[in-house]
Amino acid sequence: MNLIDNGDNNQIIIDDTVNANQAMITIHGTNNIIFIQENTVFNAKVFIQGNNNQLIIGKNCRINGNIHIRQGSKITINDLSTFVFVNLFSLEGQVISIGKDCMFSSDIIIRNSDEHTILDMKTQNRLNQAQSIYIGDSVWLSEGVYILKGVEIVNNVIVGAKSLVSSNLTESYAIYAGIPAKKIRSGVIWDRQLK
Image 1 (cartoon, rainbow, N blue to C red):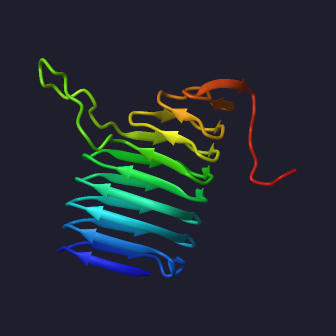
Image 2: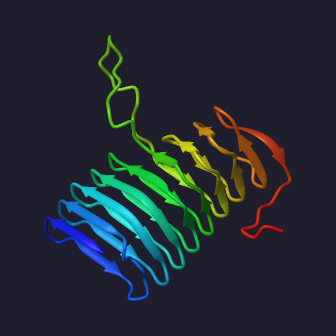
């Protein structure tokens, strides 16, 4: 693992059983926490900027991709979840929470902030506030899925390739697809094994 720690009081707690040989972690800030639990394969690039950010990864995960956390934000990835290649952006004090036994394909983007401000011309009020993202257990995101701020996805959902998820997905055991993603079928389950 390649670690650059440009800060104070950062805690990096990685269980001895974790395989992080290809990981790269860069921290600019203080009081940040990275906690990676047992038997996880962690080959991501992590960029943490600012103070009081958190990255918590559960047991028996396989994580590949890029993880950006800034401005006192948090990302949690629960046990048994796997990423082929996912880009996570948690900013502005918000959360990205990913449940247990999720299966995420490649070229996926999940972001809870636009990173730039959109203002009402008359009032100068900000129109695009950051919002947390919550993804339940056993969610399968197919290749190229994009998840926007404020989205909640219930347990046991499949999202089709190249879909844009801009609103909540509220029915379990369903497939959603399209731009924006809409329910296209109910009464389905998925399995990691090809049968």
